[in-house]
Length: 241
Image (tube, rainbow, N blue to C red; front, top):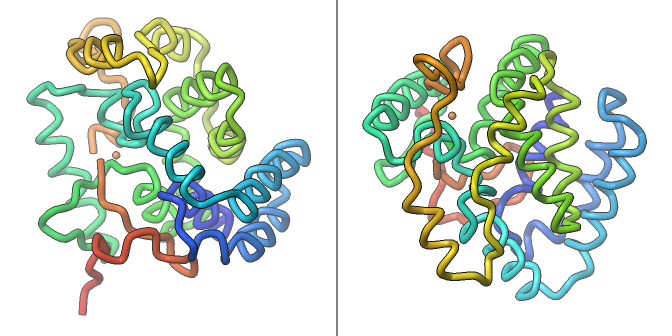
């Protein structure tokens, strides 16, 4: 599971030549993890083929349209939890401290709830603990998988695989609540602007969407997973010396 978490982390980073060159290694790591269903492994290999053989500029444009321009597909997990509320700042501080307890230190320009970085953190934990922790934002991952399915994006498989690796499965009502939020097309600039202006999401009384305090502790450092290619060497996490 640890290698597959690193592989899935790498798949969710911005496409680069280094990532294209590492697709064979990533494929091997995924194929060895029997916790990922066979059908999902096949879908992940489809994405890997697209990444390995596609035009790099087209791949990068697709990535930006999906994950950078569309709030409902943001890889910054706290977008789906706190929006721009004041709670977000404390959640960032708490999660950063949690990383540091495991010797993952971010640069001053980085924020800790970027999904690939969160997956890297999980890869430092024992497999059982990593699976349990991954279950806490599983409803967010499942909702994103459904949105990607509607877009016929091969990236759907990454999120389905993450849900499969989580020990706790998301509740349908939590997924449905997220899917009711605006999900504009990336080319509809007016709708995108409106979506980014929406209030933060709240569910029920007290609205602690991230159970057990995790995501009250998962945004944007772009650190590659260990043993995987760097996606952006200028934004690396600084390990303890």
